[in-house]
Length: 264
Image (tube, rainbow, N blue to C red; front, side, top):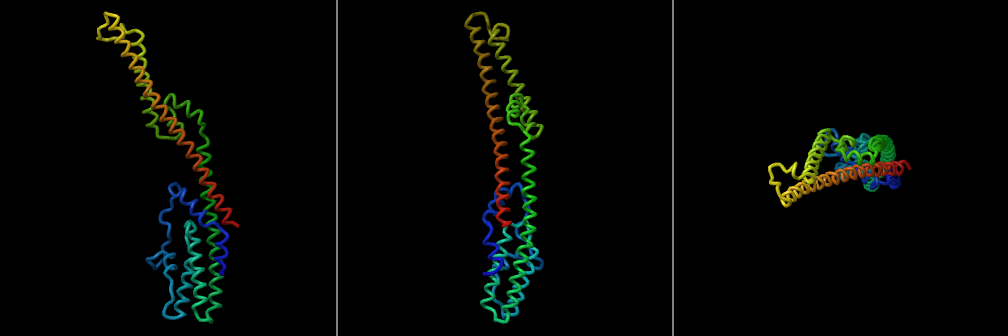
């Protein structure tokens, strides 16, 4: 078994890719496959498509060229280990199928590939450190907000600003609560003083006053219903914010575990 193969068997490739997939929306890097100079295919595909050429000399040179290119693998690519694993397999393949005189050169390529693997792994570990640091920063920012305060501010429409949402949402919430408060106040006054706040409605008999009072009751009910609806939405937003905190913590822990596995 070649050197890189033994390295790769010690680490969690799937763990690393799982960690990457869980945060790919927040830690975006653009294209994940490295494009190789003077080639239209990614290096990984070139390695997969590697085959014996017209003679052993051309085959060896082609393989050596792939090993050289692998040294410049993007350390932010979470499939970099698969690339070295496949190169390792191709080296083993050539050890079997090329003339025996190429065996010392293939052993040398094997060593170079192992050194390249460790070099890229070192750079990849530094990149993982930046990802973990990114999550630490987000965690500190998210944890600065007190959820009890957020609930209290929801009552007066200031939750959005407190949790870092756009100012326009706070303005809308405050105006919305003001409108509901105005509606409730008018309903309460109409219910309490039907004759005074009945407007142009007839209010001469007890039945007519009762009808006006029922209108006031209805206005209060409408105001309370829509306020409870607003408050329920605020509670949902706070719950969603708390889930973001937990999601960030879980994602960071995946990368911490991945780094620990990779460092072994």
